Image (cartoon, rainbow, N blue to C red; front, side, top):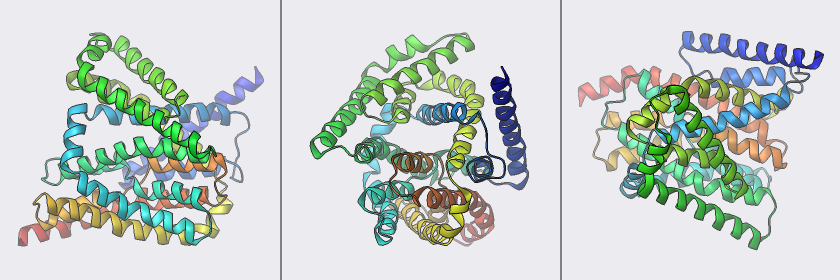
Length: 386
């Protein structure tokens, strides 16, 4: 009983603290993710007040947070949109991969971390935070701009790339042999392909099964199906998060909108817990020595994302002001980057990888939305002159 009381006290204090930090972030006008990470650093090993009993409970909540984040992201799209986006923006997507994965891989290799850490760092520097970018587009009124579909198509391409990349990374981190790794990747790709085909051809049947006029029943069905598929995906060596993402893709239209509205509070709660848990796993004393390296990598990543966005917007025939907006919208890092770093840290890829990734995400999650707000007047002036 005493241990349960401590669990409630610790977890309640963490959630209440996150609420206060979220309110502070709203007041300042930045993403709350950096503050959540800092809270995790404060309560983790080497922090100001390490948690005594609730860390294991928070770790389960963190897993749920990843699943719900990717589920709601998948609800933003449908299978037809994914296929169309993949065909129309494949070249810009490949440029995005090359420009933004190479800095992370080169960084790890130059520091002598080895090829496994290089593969993980390539993913850390590649993926844009879909959640933060979507919020930036909404907050600044950029949703209706001509470059916004280009930005969203790149995010979709990144999500599909992650569906292939995460199984490869998982196999490498697990130290599987060449044959074992190839089998794992083949199973992962087959699983993703099967789910996409099911979503394309049998999406209506899935929606008929999930649909309900009662919000409670709808919530239970959607979350239950996502967790079930996520568990199956994990058993097949595919990321549970990717499995949840594909469930979201299978749902579309009014059903997806209703599900998003119901899932939003639940997603926000457990997503915040996820970012805290990553901070819990990182010793703040280790961030100081690598902060300069993380800042340098962040600056390089800002430049490469600006180039990616400008290239994609230019190919779409958008004016120069739109090039800048597209690039800036792609700067933030968050969910996937922390997921990748978490996998690498758990497998022992390199002791400095976690601190570097934490500092890197802190910088870009905070600076991305801030940069968008700061340069908005200049972009507007450029557009008026044009």
